[in-house]
Structures are given as structure tokens and as C-alpha cells.
Length: 219
Image 1 (cartoon, rainbow, N blue to C red):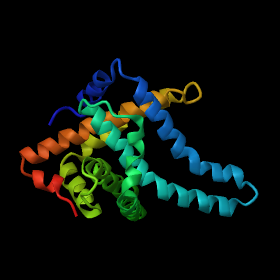
Image 2 (image 1 turned 45 degrees about the vertical axis):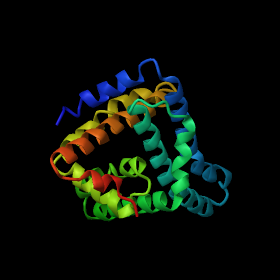
Image 3 (image 1 turned 60 degrees about the vertical axis):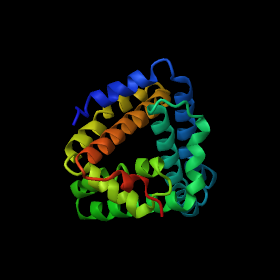
Image 4 (image 1 turned 90 degrees about the vertical axis):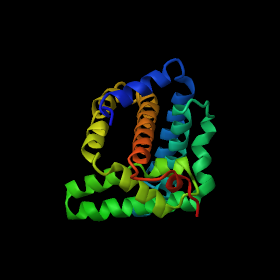
């Protein structure tokens, strides 16, 4: 497998070169919507318990669809298409599936994290590709998306961990000044991860870990 730590991110920079406009807008809207649940804490400052509950509920309801929509945008951009920023909202067309996928993802990661931090990190990496799997085929089903992610990350968790770790420095830089750099960082991370997903997908097919039919099946 190619060097995850450098080549996939380098590919993303090449893919984005001269085309940053829409991806930056995509990053801005993605961050804006992701931050909406926090407004409940500001609006309901006099009723912190209710505000916190509303924030959690809204966050759970929208995050799965947003993550799948962001993955759809990133995969299409990575594959040479010119997706509209509105692709970000396509995940909501499959609200039940994206919500269920996110809830299962959070549940499994939370349960393993309750045992120990390290198992929780391992499980989060194991299921980290599930949103891209569903973005690639929205009708694949929750169980299939999770299972494929688990299969294609097997044997690569260490490299994938280092891949994500490589964004820590960029994240710190993006916060100065006033977090403006995050508008560039979000599409950069998303498209780099789309490169990772396609690499894992292609290799899983070549090595007979998964079949093409597994990626294209519907329920």
C-alpha cells in the first residue's frame, strides 16, 4: 500500500490546486451547520439542562447526514467531477440510513472507549470509512457499510492513525487567526480521506478482501 502519511495528502493538494473556491465554500457551510447545535447553549443560557439536551439531540440528528454528504462531495471532487456545494445536503435524502449509521458508529466507539481509551481509538479507526462507504453507495445499508469499513481497515489501523495524526499540526495552524484556516483545512482533510478510502477500496478488491458486489449491493 502506498505511503498513507504523505502521498494521499499530496494528491489532495494537487487535486485542489486552482480549484479551492467551491471546496472552501463547502468547508464554510459544513462548519457553520455543524456548529448550529451549539446555538442552543447560547439561546438557552438560563436553562442549561434543557439547552444541553437539545444540543445533543440536534447534533445526533444532523451529524450523520452531514458526514455522508461531505463524503459524497469529497469523493466526487476527488474522482474528477465538479460537484455543487449542495451535494453536502444529499445525505439528508437518506436520513434514516445516515442517522442509523452515525448512531451505531457512536455506540460502538463509546462502548469500546468505556473499556479503555486505546480500544476506543482502534474501533473508531476500524469504522472510520463507513461514511465514505455509504456515500459511495447510499443504499448499501448500515450493517454493510460498517462491515466493509471494518474489513478494509484491517491491517492498516496503525497507518491510518498516523494519517489522521498528520493533520494535528495543520489543525493548530488553522486556528490562527480566529480559525479562518479551517475553511481550507476541512476540504483538505475530507479530500485526503477520500483518497484514503479509494486506496483502501481498490486494494481490498485486488486482494479479494471485498468484492465489487459488496460495494454495489443494495438493501
